[in-house]
Length: 167
Image (tube, rainbow, N blue to C red):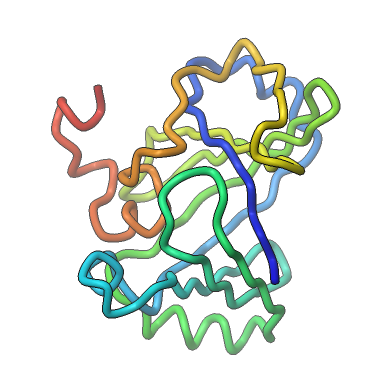
């Protein structure tokens, strides 16, 4: 069983850009929506992602927080394109920048389209209580805030957030 342990932070400035060593364009969508998870009808999100020249089908358990079950399977890119057309809600379009900091790889997601203006950094950990050295450009932690999950951004994109939701 795959377990993902990650923490998520808002990005406060562009200081990460000079340290980024790779960028990967991503397009992703969800076969199910937040209503199916919130009602308990489904217990995992089902995501289709095209990541550069590769594509994946992903299942992630619905727990809130830094530790969730995750299963990721490669699929043909043409299949992913067909599945993206079947997704509910909006599609997520972003650039993922990889940044090495203090022995960890941080993934800085720069959102485009309806989520333009939102920049979030994630770091995957080996265990839930692993200490991290947070970079200067990483601000408030939003790991437990559902509105920053990609599934939620597909249903309620950043462009439609109120001032209170942004703040």
